[in-house]
Length: 452
Ligand code: AMP
Image 1 (cartoon, rainbow, N blue to C red):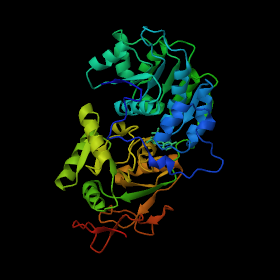
Image 2 (image 1 turned 45 degrees about the vertical axis):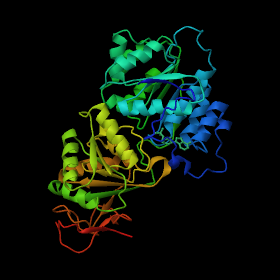
Image 3 (image 1 turned 120 degrees about the vertical axis):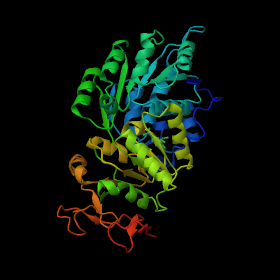
Image 4 (image 1 turned 30 degrees about the horizontal axis):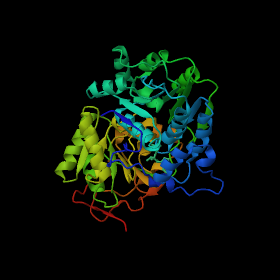
């Protein structure tokens, strides 16, 4: 089912993915923070926001909503977790609902197109439109690969106001004549940096070529490398520019630690680290799909409930793993960068970089999965000898030195010893994180415990 009405009768968010998010609400509203009404949002949207228990707009929402309502193009630098989806969905819904409805009996033309890098993000963004637009009479459809196209084609045939799509499948359906983009008034490129990383630049250009020249364009990206700046230059017209985080900065609420460990000991270290009961909901990142499978199998053997999500898994299997993780039925989700892109899971207590990413921007994306929208979080990075260069790149990009967990049972051979890093790093133990108690180096019998 890839299309649904946004009317009150059809709640769009699945029960396993509650959209009422405590984390953003947890940011203490400043006295001067405007409320949603003062940003110019209309009653049906305010009602939905009230039902979602969103008290105040987040910074990206405050800065963005008035510009989009005014019809301007916009360049937004914001990570997932900042509330950026609502920042564009709310004003878009308002504009769509206020525009002339199609004549009775005519098929609804697509008026808003949101391009996203992954299927998971497509589902989430469409769900958000459903949630915020539940008191409006607008319809939406999702278009993404990895599943049969039949239901998507049916939804398009019925007519839809909004479509949320990944570029590859959208091009497929356009080529088959199922999608007509001649009525699009607003285009959103969400997570544009990821879309370029994933090689979507050509399909994006092909899609844009089919849009009317007169339209509103919104581009959101977590990072602003030169190729994104160039794309923005080509697409956006006199855009408002908003940024809620300096480029490539990491959220300050995240405690970031590095654990130096030999490659062969990483799996043992992971098992040890996961003995800490404070590790309630843990997202583990590997560089490859096979790596994700290997880690998951290994955890299974150690009776740690874990699932892997990556591009080789069917859409069904990925969604199933995600809901099990969201519901707390599994404690550990093992993911590759691409599969985890944009997934919105509240309450991730820890991100573990089982392997460091070779692109430092991915580190920022990864750890952004914890400390969502203002809640605290911890990121642990397992760094072996070959990954030191990646660590340096990450620290150069984030302009911060990761603190070293100086006391764990599998220290890397030749790793700097405690208090003698020689690299100006802070050392110690993360609060509430594993610590070694007795036992020697390389000890394998569970020499870690949580601090009270
Ligand atoms: P996003 O950055 O769009 O992925 O949003 C991150 C999370 O924050 C989602 O779970 C949203 O439902 C939630 N959220 C967005 N805006 C607000 C707000 N103003 N108050 C509370 N929660 C919010």
